[in-house]
Amino acid sequence: MESGGVIISTKPNQPEPLTMGAQVKDRLEEPVAEKNQERLFDYPDPTPHPHSPPHVTISMPSTPTGLNAEAMRNGFFGGDERLSAVHGFRDKRFDSFKTWSGRLERQISGFRGRTHDVEDEDRNSPKGEHTAAPPVARYFDALHGPELDKLKPLEHSVLPEDKLWPFLLRFPISSFGICLGVSSQAILWKTLATSPPTMFLHVTQFVNFALWCTALALTLCVSTTYAMKVVFYFEAVRREYYHPVRVNFFFAPWIACLFLCIGIPPSITDKLPSELWYVLMAPIFGLELKIYGQWMSGGERRLSKVANPSNHLAIVGNFVGALLGASMGLKEGPIFFFSVGLAHYIVLFVTLYQRLPTNETLPKELHPVFFLFVAAPSVAGVAWATIHGHFDTVSRIAYFIAMFLYASLVVRINFFRGVRFSLAWWAYTFPMTGAAIATIEYSAVVKNPFTQVLSLGLSAISTVTVTALLVSTIIHAFVLGDLFPNDLSIAIAEKPPRLSKRRINLICGTPERKKVDDDDE
Image (cartoon, rainbow, N blue to C red; front, side):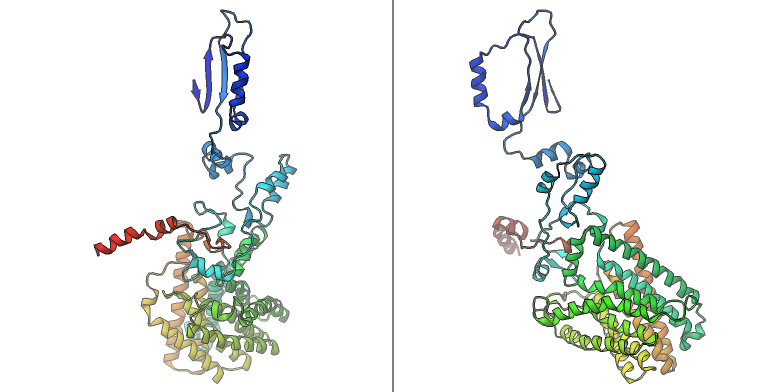
């Protein structure tokens, strides 16, 4: 009788017909694999009795030749998903991205009384595999898309693609774009409530207070979540830092804090301590030394090779810092960062306009990322007006550049049709808000109906855009559940895969199939 892979046979309790020599011969001819796997429990009674109960033989089936331990686990436990749920087993496929590669969990389990063979588990774990961050050229070779966030057909991920990853692994640095969008709206509504050209609207300062509190809560939430990612999945953070597009978003947390300081409601405080400015600008200065040095050094990360519109995030922090410092009464520090930002903005602007042959990150399909062109000149104009004391000629030059770039993007509506929603879109909302704030400041100097209407129109467009993105984000997060998909951009292999001709033909199509298709055409 057979039950669940275990053979149970019943037979009368009689002596075995085989002799001792035959049994020894059978044992010698038995394969080694079957000798190690098969367990035979057979206890014959040397003195049978006609009324004795039947003898039971239990035989465990041996492992077939060529069946490894992985196949055994999949067969008995139904794959890694069910296997990880069984007590004593843990999914190790994400250990290469963990900070401690799962060793902390084993130590905690040992404190709880669970015994593990730590040395064997460390030896069999994937620790050390895929831990080296790929060079920047591999990101260009393995990824495509406006933000280099999709794997090319011939590439494979070092993490499982058929399973939803842990949440922290799927939480990207671009999530700080939400903080940028909401905190910039707090600045806009503060300007609408306090600026003379828009006083006739009678905008209450409660809107600024509500938006500022919302932005503060979002910044704390996103910062806490990403800090947990740094603690538990540092390898994923390191790969984001080496990503030619994601590295620019490491400026976003500090820019969001600068926005919160600029947009703080007057009911909370009218003047912030100047020491806060130095605290917030120190990490921005450190990142600039690293990234600007790479742009200038001429290596793999030279600007002509990695330039993309998201590099404006690395520029705009200088102008936002100069604006905050000047509003606090500082002089030399804001002028220093304004000068650094202006010099690098000119170089970046020319590089992106030239579209050098080596610049592989600019996608063919246009994307809202191009609104980042508007951010730097808009904020620069307001920052210089705050430093100098009024909206002079330099501020107007920067403002007019921003308005021209804004208009050149708005008239090309076809550029933005059929674009897939992305969480990084939030980083592209604050340039529209910056243009609206600069227009309000400009209308305070040039007073006429056109400037007032333009300031109100740009403010309305900015608010509607942020509202639409907020609704889309909520729908994708709580209804569709696809706001944080597997982040394949950080899971590329260090080296390109070795593909056989057969696999290439399966992916790209066989020559015979292409010939038939050409004949049909």
